Amino acid sequence: MRPSQILLKSGRSAWKGPYFIPFQNLRDALTNHEPVKTQARSCTILPNFVGVRFLVHNGRDYTPVLVTQDMVGHKLGEFSITKKRFTFRCVIF
Image 1 (cartoon, rainbow, N blue to C red):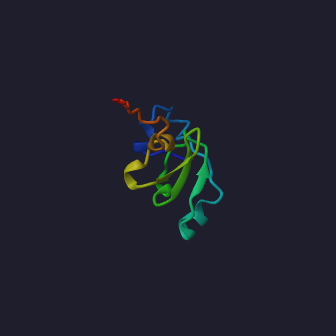
Image 2 (cartoon, rainbow, N blue to C red; image 1 turned 90 degrees about the vertical axis):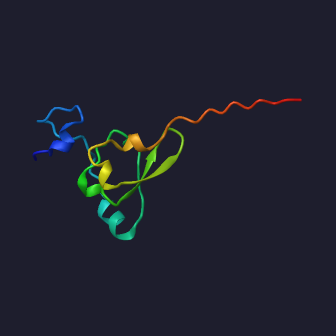
Image 3 (cartoon, rainbow, N blue to C red; image 1 turned 90 degrees about the horizontal axis):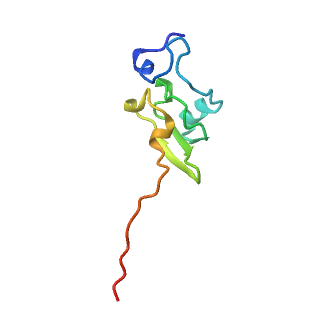
């Protein structure tokens, strides 16, 4: 398997190829539009993942991620936010 040039920019050795996990229910997810539940945040998004909805674990709950063509070559964890937004609440009496 020879990875494409887009996938080689991930900082991983070219002879190793992209890091991905074989999802068994990926074909069912494409036909039935069901989300694939995963905790593999470091999995590289491949071109055959386009159009699939993933539920990526962010440490507390699963956030939905719909894979588009622009996401190919990135990691699944990049699109599942792990930090809460801080808001300062000032109470005036």
